[in-house]
Image (cartoon, rainbow over all chains, first blue to last red; front, side, top):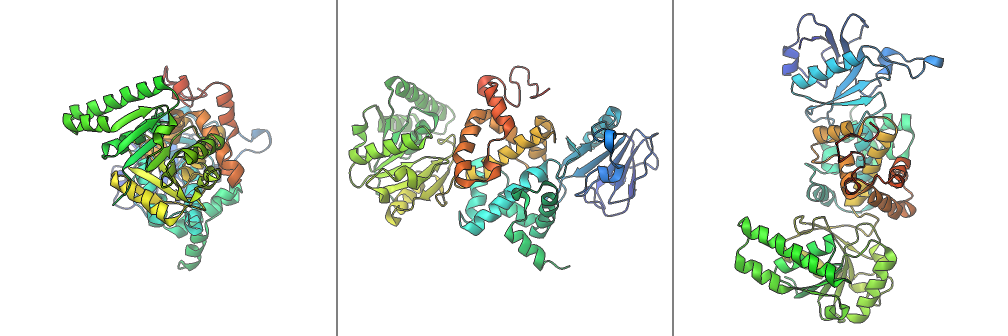
Length: 213
Length: 292
């Protein structure tokens, strides 16, 4: 499947050297905007795919107002290849659609990524998409449990690996990804959802305050 | 080195209790499996024999070892038969009153030195022990399901548990080849304290239209490397069980993430309990997704 890339050079989904970049064509009906490259709408294209950071797709497409609210959708989709902070990119693409996203664009995007050997999960345009929305409160809880002395970091991680079959525990994972990164993600989610589960844990706040500016 | 020689298991006709009895007998301890129903105990004994038969067939155990293990494992529906056990582990219904009453009876039945352990996954060890005169000899010992295969045990001392009791129980878990981790006596200990709210978040994501259940599970497995997605797991353990877990957690923790999501309650009311009822977040007749 043919695709072209507009790349600012700072893509977290497809860093320099990623094979996906090498297979891009000079011109194609599917266009990917990577690393914050400014997206240009083009209804003639089959699909336009915008790499998202923490922001919603609506930031790029604009959103309907009044009676048009909730009717967003076109051939433009968002995507993010999930990364746990500093970790290498995973094999998962979170593909972001809007209520009236064109089904042809959605199908083309799914086919493009799966043909490239990636896994695709489709989600709506909500903060944190699927994974960060679900796991960040869990990492906050684990960090809080550590402060409260529920168990040691080693035992919490061991429990999740042995008791639940996870490949790693919450403390080792959030620390490996970077506590300052976790702070930034949860702070952004907390701003939108306002629920205590997303409020950055104390250890993440400390890490952020100590991080080089 | 453990001084424990004889182990009793209460609720041994249940899945968890039967697994714990296997762990104890397999490790060389004389084991008494107690439950109320003789028929249920007979069925559990049959299942246990089948489990070891498979172990022999797979070359993991010799026939003579199997015979020795089964000879060490006896069943009873008379609680008095646990009187001379060194350690009694209860794995009865997850209800504080049921567990308190059982421990009070064991307290009156067992020898003074007997350690009483609770396999509770969510309840307070201190509260369960509160009806006993031997609160210093009560300890939390939460096995993971299925106990005969999962090696992890969450070990929790209650407020009045003595160090000697905790160390003796800890040494026994190591003697049976399990891996103990120490936690405080807090709702859900480590495992369920992390898992139950996480599963609720997945339900709320469905409720909020973030994604279809299959996409949520797929994302979690592909992105995080989990073997099972949260909604698949809830279907496996039962949506009604998830409600019960929430009801054990939320009143104590007042953590909004631990409160049962409205969608979960609606699905339970609709009889969608997960695999056991044929449908939950997935339909087990045709694999269709909930809501599709």
